[in-house]
Amino acid sequence: MYLYIKRILDFLLALIGGVLLSPMFMVLILAIKLDSSGPVLFTQKRVGKNKKYFNILKFRTMRIDTPQDRPTHLLENPEKYITKIGYILRKTSLDELPQIWNILIGDMSIIGPRPALWNQYDLIEERDKYGANNIRPGLTGWAQINGRDELLIPNKAKLDGVYIKKISFLFDCKCFFGTFLSVVKHKGVIEGGTGKLKLIETEMAATKEITMTKE
Image (tube, rainbow, N blue to C red):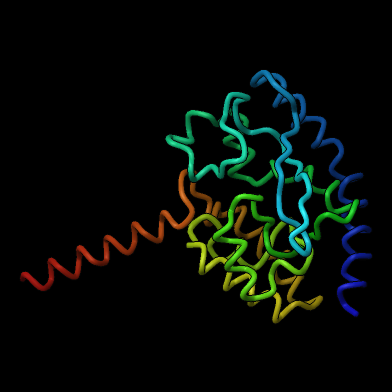
C-alpha cells in the first residue's frame, strides 16, 4: 500500500519542488551556458523499475567531448573533463535537480536505489540478489547517505537491499533529511573511483599492520 502512496507523494513533492526551485534553475542554466559550449542538459540511459531502461536528466557538468555511457570513475583522469561550474554542481549534487522531471513522469522516485547505468552489469547483478531492481530508482537513497562513491559495488547493493527491507514513510524521511547532511559535508563524493577511498583506507591499514609487525 505504501508504494502507491509513495508515488502520489513523489508527484506532489516534485511538482512543488519544481515550482519553488524554478529561479535556481534559471541561474544554473545561465551559468552552464556561460561556462562552456554545449547543451544545458545531459541525458543518459539508466536502469529503471524492473530493469526497464529510461533516460535520466542531469545538468551537464562535463565537456561535450567526454566519452559517453561510461561512469566517471572509469574515465582516465576524469577531472580534465569536468567544467568549472560542473565541479560545483557535482559537489553540491545540484546537477541532479533536472531529475524532478523523471520523478514527475514516473521514471524515478525521490527516495530509492540510485539508477545504474545500462552497462553497469556488476551492480545490476548484485542488486538482483536483494530485489533492488524491482522498484523505482531514486534521486537519493540509503546507500547515498552511507558512502556514495566510497562504496564498493557489493556494499552498495547490500545497502540498497536494506532499503528494500525497511521501506516505509519514516525510513524515506530518514533518507531525505540525511541527504542534506551528506551534501553539506560533501560526504562520499569522490571523483575518479567507486570504492576508491575504501581501497585507500584498506591499503593504509595493511601498511600500518606490517610496520607494527616489523617493530
